[in-house]
Length: 227
Image: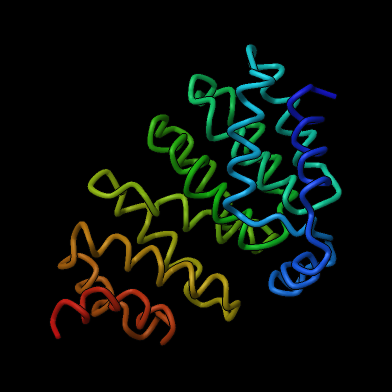
């Protein structure tokens, strides 16, 4: 076990709150237990960990991430995501396999959304050939992977591949799954801050294909500005 992993797990265990833990678990509707360590303290534990137990190689970076990701408690997974994001020098094409492995073992929106927007989406922005993989995800049997195919565009702003985004949305728009419909609306709303006219036209053009939820979410920021 990497020293950083051991430090983080020890601190999470030591600072756990038995009152908050079941509440956090219930909120996420998961069978995975929580220590009961909230965000502010988790971030402090992470900052202390990287100072006391620095990661110096890619292999050690991946090792620490996977050890935390495979931990028994949810907060360990959150810490794995923090480690992954922190060490930007390892954010290159070689990270793709690791990120996809994490995505395929994520089981809820909290970890899926972080991976999609903060890690995978950043990688796709740098290495556009991964857009081929993203398109393949639209056929995946795992709806969290299909959700990720939408949310990777979330932070691309003016560099958004609108052709791929529109193709992805239209391919998945028929799905009744809440998390797919919500993701479509979310990414449209986010892109409306960059190009409101494109979003308005897209929703108007495909009014009959998009769910009410997706349209409401997609137009939320635009309608707020118009009030």
